Structures are given as C-alpha cells and as structure tokens.
Image (cartoon, rainbow, N blue to C red):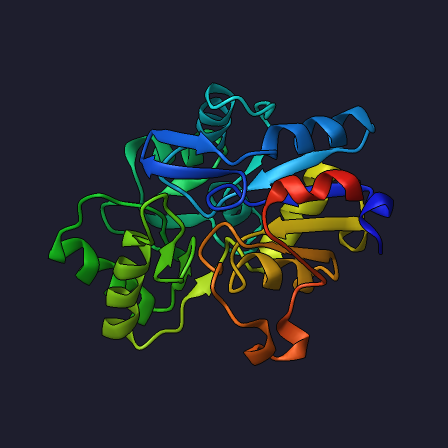
Length: 264
C-alpha cells in the first residue's frame, strides 16, 4: 500500500512527533504539524499512540496541543486504553499514578489494592514503589493472575538521550520473583491493534503506522499487517537496517516525519 492510499494513520509521539525534555515539556519535530494538518484536510482519520502511561490519554492530547499539534481529545491511544481490550482483566492490581488510576476506574476497571481475588497485575508508570507492593503482586501472579505491562522495552526516546522506563523496571522485578512472562498490552500487542481499529474505524491493513522505534512501532504495524514507516529522529536513529531480519524491517524509512508531506 502506498501512503496516499492509506485510509488512516497512527503516529508514535516521542521521537516521532515531539522530543521530550521533561515529563511536561515537549518540543515539536519540524514538519509534524503540517503532516497532521494535511491528513486531516484529506478527510482521513489519524491517532497518536504512546506507551506513556503516567497520564490519562486526553492529558497527552493537551500537551500536544500546547506544543502546536492539532491533536484532539479522543485521538490519543495509550496502554491505559489498550489494557481495556485485554480479555479477562476485571479485577486488577495496578502500579500506576493517581491520575491513571482515576482514568482506569472511570472506564469501569475494578482496581484491587487490599487483597482479594486478582485477575491481573497491570504495570503502568509509577514514580514510587514499595517492596511490600512488589511482593503482593508477585504472589498474585504465582497464584494465577496474569502479569500485564504497558511496555517492556528498557527506554524510549528523549531530547537528551534515552529515558529509562520505570514501568519496565517494576515489571522485571515482579517477573523475576514470580517466574512469569509479562504480557505487553501497549505497543506492540494484539490489544493495541484492536483499539487502533476501534478508534479509526478501518481495517488494520488500511492503516499506516509511523514511529521511531523498530522494537515497538514497526512490530505494532506488522501485527496488524499495516504499512510501516520508520523515522530516524528517535530511539532507532542509528539502527543498521541491513542487520535487521527482513521480516522485521519497515516498509519505508525516512529522516523525519516532515518527509511524509510529499507522499500523502
């Protein structure tokens, strides 16, 4: 599929549309706004998908609008949304910020902090964690709960270099103690593909997925048989694609998101 034939688009945020210098400070990558405007003017829908889970989705949209990008509430996908598409997670023991917990509750998820049956442990972003919490989660997993994580890569792109993932650190501790293999519900996962389809209203084969991470964004697109575009402004900027198996390579590689303009 050529990009002008794509019926919808999904963009990563950090390293693709913006560079982040702090939790609340983002700077737009040149051309990002023009690309989103061009797609919107063509009548095609787009969404942005970040594995960031420290904020509710609409808070990311607010950040992007403050940076000058035309992203509306409801256009942002995060693991806080895709975890809802994971089947069997009703009573959940969470590792998440207070705002993320509030969002999950508002969406109907039953959060369990004080004992009782646990269907799944869900690790999002958390700034503080106690050993007692880790042990309670590991014991829940040993007893049969699934270990779900927003993301399991060690870092993501920041303006001044990789930003280490605290969620991955927490997940690794629980996985080690429980001998369980974490299930990713953010990028890349079938749950993520499902929420992409639901939001955009098209088949995943008709979507173009654009991102900077060959371990997250490109596999997400491949899971849904979408067209994949790697941009060299983020975490995979120096990856030698000749050393990547052909089945894991992007369909197209560009220097930055602004180079999409003549292809739309």
